[in-house]
Image 1 (spheres, one colour):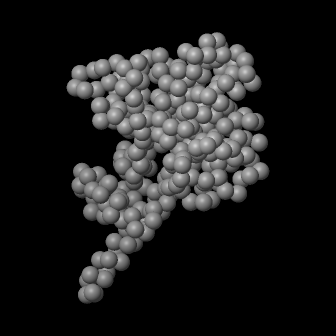
Image 2 (spheres, one colour):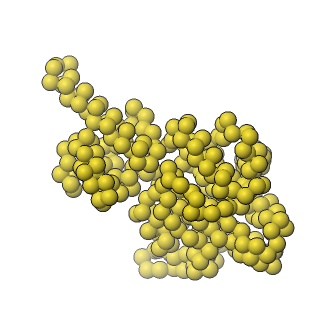
Image 3 (cartoon, helix red, strand yellow):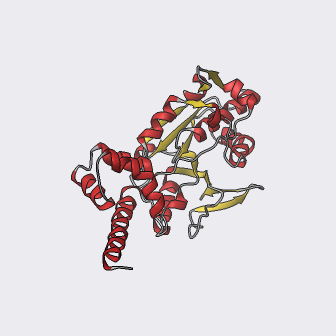
Length: 283
């Protein structure tokens, strides 16, 4: 390798480290050393549109205007928004067959509250709302106080999509049955469908960075925080799970993603086998 090539390589590595530090501070995401290609592919269009030549220059530009739109563009581009309807299926079946009946008996006539953290473009909270509707249809009067779902995400872009509640046929084909599609969605032009008002009305979408305080969210009976902790450092995961515990009522339920585990917090949560799957109960 020539001297010029070596300097260029070192410069690129330094750029990546600067950007990695920015991203971790901004939203907690820890980038592995092999993620340079991912970063470049996701930010290529932004760098070109703003005529920015390097990741270091990008971070400088953001720091110069921390409340500007560029920061939001970058965070939106770097947060993973892969999601499905009724993802992993078991949490939704457990919600319908075990959790809602338990909570209805425990808190008769009271409003129940569910937090869907890192809700992305809305498939998870809408799936929860559909499950609640199905439960109400077969268990008349048990949820007299109703259910509120608070759905949060860091990305303002995907929250806007979630609030709109419109999806194309390709997105709807990922986990949604034809029966549920016809019952809970209204067809629009261009092979698009919109979630019906009865399903939307129990969901409150809010912008929340998991690094921020959760105090304004209030207390919950159930928290879904799935497939987001895998991007964070071990210390940040423990911090999030400790603070989520503070939002849960005693005996409240927590669901994590299939590849996520709750380590070192047995004093806060009890693990329960669902067969299939696992959930946690707040002590």
